[in-house]
Image (cartoon, rainbow, N blue to C red; front, side, top):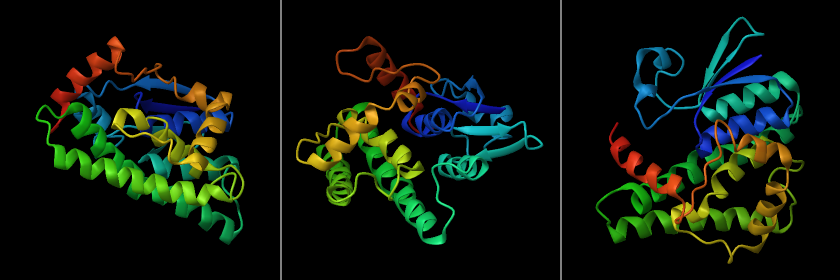
Length: 226
């Protein structure tokens, strides 16, 4: 049994979606990041960086893993799913996984912060992160022009990038100019396991007209700097 400590964010979805795709049994421990509980001693014993998600593998001597990318690799190796065993295939998946971890996540994450959460709206900063997010989307779009998935067969690289790209509108970015990315996103949104994973620990409706979303914005404003 995997114990998953998470919240409804793109990094959280990466792991819950992978668990669903791999058909691994897991239990969920919601970590409400709007309250700062992720900075308390109990959670810091799981992730010293105070970020979700984290897991405990009860079937492997209570082995703990933090950092979403590291968790994806661990689960893929544990199950033998969604990560090739040959060196070249494995490397290709890891390249596109690292692309998300080092590029899409940080840049789109900052677009979320400055477009949605930061109380002082700084147009130049917002534009900077939105443009960089779109540049990275362009890289994905070019790759997906001639490839159904990012790294050969469907893999953890697709799960990781999907978890972020699906919230493009929350960053104030549109994807109509990226037809191949849009095709890929629509296909992945049709995978029941991914959608189930994106509802863990609850379904987050991040839309401008949604009360839950507006409440989260107010809570997130208090999180900045924690």
